[in-house]
Image (cartoon, rainbow, N blue to C red):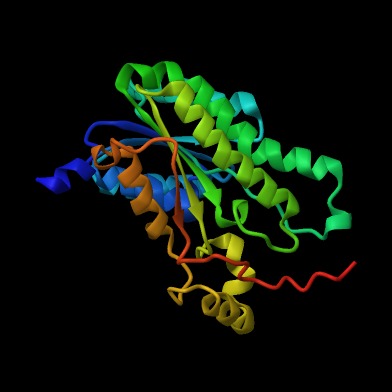
Length: 261
């Protein structure tokens, strides 16, 4: 059956930033589709809540609390998965983000930090995982952003870093084909903690919804479902691609009210 192609039965996944939002939804979705999951983030109690949902789906969870800005800690998740579950098939690089700032407030070190946080961590984990992924014919998904392809005031560091992550995906996919597939998702506005200020402000939420052709803010499960497609046999002929899961956005959808120069 075609639905069987979306299963990841007995595979092992690592999901970063898995304590809440897109990472948590993705970890649970992978478990519901049959995978055991290593979950990592800073906040241990959030991870244990996600672990209980994974176990409720009948799969195993390994909780690894860590500050993944430590590249050694990020890379160490690959070995942790192999040691705990005997294999590694799936990496979901979901760590990222950078606070908006006006152009003149964006100093060179802000760009460096944004690149390290959004690209460096993903590379550290992926590089460590590749020897294991080569054994299983594994798959990597990088969580990028719509801001990596559209312009928006205040997003200089974040958008540049996410654009870099998208192109990193294309380059890495060519390097590692045909045994390891690497794709990315350009995420639009999704109802996570990063959008708390929008979700609690009627004017901002209405503005964002109005500038999204599908007329709504995304749900973390929208992204989790796309991850599942990409890492399962359903997506087995897809590599080096950046899927846009953004409600149809082709222009900035939020006025941050930053001052003019």
